[in-house]
Image 1: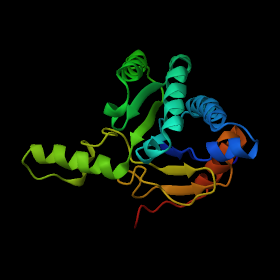
Image 2 (image 1 turned 180 degrees about the vertical axis):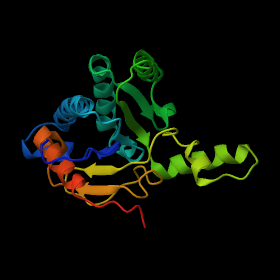
Image 3 (image 1 turned 60 degrees about the horizontal axis):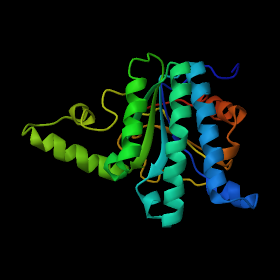
Length: 228
């Protein structure tokens, strides 16, 4: 942390590479997703310990749900099985948990468990951890536009932000994407208008605290001009 002289207030994380991590090790894809869930919990703890106020993790995109039915089913099962542990660590670290995205696609039992995890952390005063599931930024913007239109009034950029899933949240300062790809893949497009981008070839399952520190050191060296 000695080389990190400024921290982002809001970090976005695109967790990419779980399937490739598993295949490199001749393991079932589900094992990659399970390992990825473990790393997610570790990094949540790190963010909370560092004093970062907001973190949004891209866990499941709308496109992910078009994968093979067997993989989607295993993803749902893993997600449900991990919720108890996620609820435990968020409360231990005083983290407020929020799910964003179209939650109507989830089975009732899972949706209720997600709501329970949210409600159980609502009074936590530390970092806000948003988990984007069945999320797509274009769909979020369309949804926000429809909500804004219902008010039948002129809407400013600041007003529009209040119709997004991330309402009352500062825009993203830094987006980290693991796994070697160099694109945003429909993640927080409105909120990331002036975000710094950090891409690493490291797969998410291998994204250790040391790798995180590299990203934060890189960010702390940048001169942010916000388009000026």
